[in-house]
Image 1 (tube, rainbow, N blue to C red):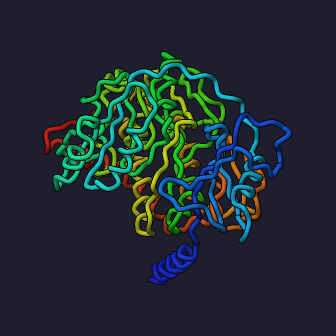
Image 2: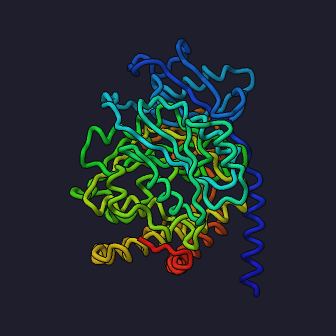
Image 3: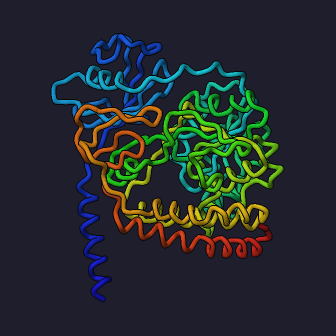
Amino acid sequence: MAGGRRARQETRREIEQFLSIGPVQVAELDLPGARGAEDRGTADTEGVELRPGPGGAPITPGSVFVLVRRAGRPVGTLLGQVPDGADPVAVLAGLARELPPQAPPEPLPVPPSASVVVATRERAGRLARALDSLLAQDHPDFEIVVVDNAPVTEETRELVERKYGERVRYVCEPVPGLAIAHNRGLAAVHGRVVAFTDDDVVADPRWLTELTAPFAADPGLGCATGLILPARLRTPAQVLLESHGGFAKGFVPRTYDPARPPADEPLFPFTAGRFGSGANMAFRTSLLRAVGGFDPATGAGTRARGGDDLYGFVRVLAEGRRLRYTPSALVWHHHRETWRDLETQAYGYGAGLTAYLTAILVNRPALLPAFLARVPGGLAHARGLTAVRGPEAGDGAGAAGGGAGVPGGGAGAGVPGGHDSRTHPWPRRLSRLQRRGMLYGPVGYLRARRALRTVGLEAR
């Protein structure tokens, strides 16, 4: 009784602290040309372009979360504080030039034909925003397929037919579940590479080209993932999530090869969350079909609550194919907005993690010995994932480029800077929910498999 009362009091305090988090502006800053040593610390703004994030207002004094580009290429993020009366371009450009240098990108080959699958359910307004950005892609040969998952109304179909006509194909999947919807899209596409994104993103114009070109360069590549940044940081929930890493995986390209397991990933390939996220992923179409697509007993909309993207990553690696993380393939994601959303998300992430692991072992029992060998390290990893994470020492103002941080402009604690800067404490309530979700995940997956049989489907 007393323990429950203390937990409720603690949660109330955490919510009060959570509600005190203020909004942060989102912007893009494009620096011209290649970086030279002579421009470090200079206040020159010639050729510098500052623009708000997708759908945002012009930048004003205050805290600003900035994606820094070099000649259009994403190279890092920073947090800046624009004082009253100051020029935002000059302030933020000065900070941007402190980002660590990066090697120039290699020329891209002509990307293969591609298909983009967007699964959606009763969110026509958000879907329209996503489709507008997808139709603006500079990829030379692609199609878009919308999968309307278990629709209640005709709103999505009417939107696609009325506004997008033959430019977007509409497909209906009556059985609920994100993996089921993705498999329905996989069956319908014609491209050599199939990309998946969500209805709550805005895709950078070069997203699809950057995400799919690596398949042309590497015949052994089975999957590619890209960078996900916040489109808005208007609510405490959005700021808190991005403060603890959000969906970003940094700005350093990386290839994961099962023939050469990475030394810094002792749990490889079972820490699939490090590889990317389902809002920004692509697969070689023939390979994904050959492995049976996604397990329909995983993903949002099922009792498993998630894990469909992680399952896909590991299935590709288990086939001996490589996975490429490509930070230049960028989408802007509209994070969830409320405390209740974060509770749902924390529980779902925990459940999806262990659900996908269960799915892998059920469908690929040959991986069991490798999995058991990693159990001790996996338990430590799980404890780290669900730990009550506090803010880092320092003033909380920082920049991140390629995973390294440098001092920012004194923006102060309480706002997100570089990836996983943790400038806010992670509430114990959310950690507890994530642990509960992890305990539930295997049960949820098995329940989802049973539920599939009632609609005439079988798990992969």
